[in-house]
Length: 316
Image (cartoon, rainbow, N blue to C red; front, side, top):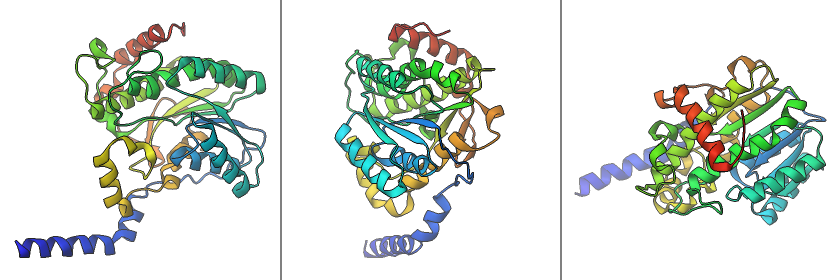
């Protein structure tokens, strides 16, 4: 037993000694474009913390007018103040957006459209993970409602402004976890069987399928769209799982920082020449493999129709 403990201690010590090299390996791609954004308008959901905050910081640094759309306005104002001071860009604004409530989504869109005549980049960044079973204000299972339906509705409401501002882009944060996901049309709300881990995976698959179908419907409009796996990132996303919080703390020297996690979102928002890859999935700033379920056009079309029905909208 003592020998095993000794070997384990030695192994962990070796891992931590090698942490800088391991982190460099796992840091992933870097957005290398030097595109500047003066006069451009950006909306980022959930940009009061984590990946979204770092994405907002970089886009503000490039001169964009950035809207931080988040549920916690006080936290959003704190993030915006920090970004304004860091980037010397005063055009970092905060607006209330609760993706678990369609009334809030509609109120945000109405206010934004009254305020801004252009929108060049929409980054659907916010999300929940490993959430105990609950429903949104509209009766949707929380992962489905926030991660998919909330962003589906927001994109729908802002799409005409994006078209008017073309070339424009929509970036949807998904995850490698989509591989374990399945669109269970017979039980979308998880009322028959629920696993909060798989509920997250299902919603991330929905993000990839939404991006795929949206790209098809946007052909010829000048608006393109991409789904993104940011990597394994230190963020507040895991806060609802004690086990994941523990693992993230234990392996924190090896996972991406929020800034590193933002790189693929930035790449898809900014890189030149990505238009032919609209609808594709990216990881580490390059196109990546998706699961067979994420390539199923019939599922994507059906999910689109069901989403419209659930939200009470018409979107052809």
